[in-house]
Length: 161
Image (cartoon, rainbow, N blue to C red; front, side, top):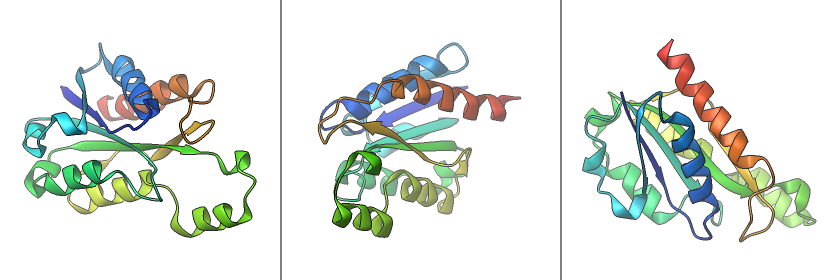
């Protein structure tokens, strides 16, 4: 079975998570890890599992990620199993009541990406999830790559059994 791990990244954190996920799925699936700007939505044809990741930027996925997801034909989504993730700053690490309120109002991007793919016909395997960076530019918090690898493996394994 084929899996495609697609990501966008500004500071390399989302890329690190995507690579960790891709490495975790190798051996179980035929996996390719690619930056969203290096692909056309037509590249998902024949993909069984799609993993998509984006940094949270102003409470949205990157424009490249949004455009890519919108560009996938509904008939392709109908054949895919998907999982979605984002990279984000933990609100526990931010001392700003205003930012905390904004996050509660607008949220992060993994959930909307997952819902969008599901509405277009994909099977969402697990709830979308976020992986934490220490600051706007990172680095990732300790253990996040390992947590990402475990999360993806568990999502795929449940579907394969």
